[in-house]
Image 1 (spheres, rainbow, N blue to C red):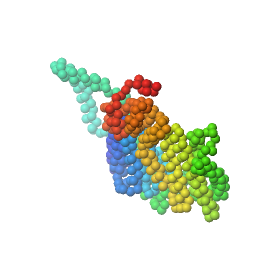
Image 2: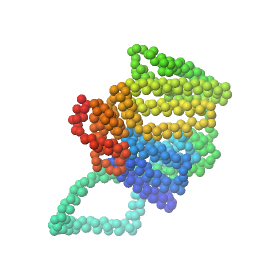
Image 3: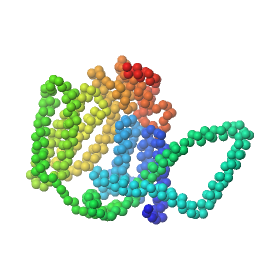
Image 4: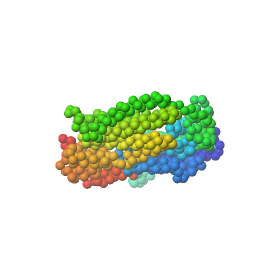
Amino acid sequence: MLVLDEQQSKQQTMLLIGALVCGCVHHLLFYDQAWGVSYPLFIAVFYIYFYWALKERIALRLDASFMLLIPIALLSLTYAVFSNTLFMVLNAFAIPCLIFVHTIWTLRRPAIRWYDVSMVLAVLEQMFGHTMRYIPRPAVVVIRSIKERIQTGRSQRMWKILIGIVISLPMVLLVGSLLASADTMFDRMLSQLPELVGDMHPGETIFRLIWIGFVTSGLFAYVWGMLYPLKRRHRPEEEMWGNQAQASLGNADPSEFGPSYANVPAVPRKKVGLDATVTITILLILNTMYVLFAVVQFSYFFGGGMTALPSEMTYADYAHRGFAELIVVTVINFTLLMITLHGTDRAVRSNDIFLRVLLAVLIGCTGVMLCSAFLRMLMYEEAYGFSETRLLVDVFIIFLSVLFTIALVKLWKDRLQLMKPYAILALAAYLIVNYMQVDAIVASNNIKRFEAFGSIDTEYLGSLSFEVVPYLLELKKKHPELEGTDKAIQLMKRRLPLHGETSWVSFNLSMWKAGKALQAIPLEPLESLEYYSR
């Protein structure tokens, strides 16, 4: 353990107390509670602690790094606003990752950019290099503090207090029994003490303390590791990290960004590229096949030749069989596009121009594949209905189309750096998907499909999030003869917590609206659900 000076020791104590407060707040908000408004509240508490702990190293101002707080705040608010289980699980991983990126970028910029690949290395280094080293430090600080107090004269006073407690216990029992015999109400009050003590479970208490200690140690180690990262020694195997760090630093002095960056070596970057002739050959062969495929797609989907399918195959079957393959080929094309743009030697101008043309053809053919995949999915949804997965696939196809469009612009503008627009687009797309209320769109489209074709899976609607409740009630109102709607509504009502079962930290707007809308509908016994299923 490093020896700290007096100022660092005081700072360490204050940060540990702040982390302990955060640990207690975390326990209050999340222990035995459903996630709701508690999530954005704790994110706010964490950032208050973060900016307070690093107030001497970073300035709280509206800059580029501060803007990354917007998606973090919006994603954390989804726990208080929506009730989609899928996005709750995804956001449980996405939000901490964004917090790691934001906090590290805030401290180390401009030495590192949040959308670079080097950010992944920086996060791994911070988590497993700096943070893990300081995980045991809170326990060491507490033990050392107790040891120092025992060695001082104050320990004698504590021993005297303990002796006084031990001597007073028999006297309390004697006096208490006498007072209980003298007063009936006092006796009743004392008789309730065993029940109160019996409600305290030692195992649960220990688990609560471990919970608080774990969160406290983690937060303290993360922040302390940012303030005092490990000093690194240059080794030959670190040259790869040195290349990436130097590329991000440019002409800046690495020592300006903390002690762990003072010794980063400035190693000249060696550019390695694939042979242009090999890449041209690959693209020519693939593009020939893709052009032929595009012609076939135009004849089926875009040219009015849809009646030419074999008689034994429906369009839903045709859509289902080809969709996954088209997505896989699209991903392969995107990988090939990135390798060609960033890994191919294009020093010869003629090869460079030819590669640009071939890549433009590749992007165009991939666009046809994406349109075909999108139309196939629409046909499949028309035949079998809408679902959460199918709608997300539609969004993913649109997302890939935008990625290829940006890559097409890159072909003619070499100065455009793809990582930044791609990172911004991915983050924006993820936020849009979180807030577009996927389940509500699925329910709305399935009801429209039912009114057009007379088919709907009400049991599936009943398994979705609480955003579907208004649509189920509307369906029941418009089509009271439809079987299964009552069962779906009852399933929704059974998933709602009973009044008084949840605390304010678990408040969720979607759940509250659903409870209010279903308040007038009585909860039927389980036997009725079996009747509905028959």
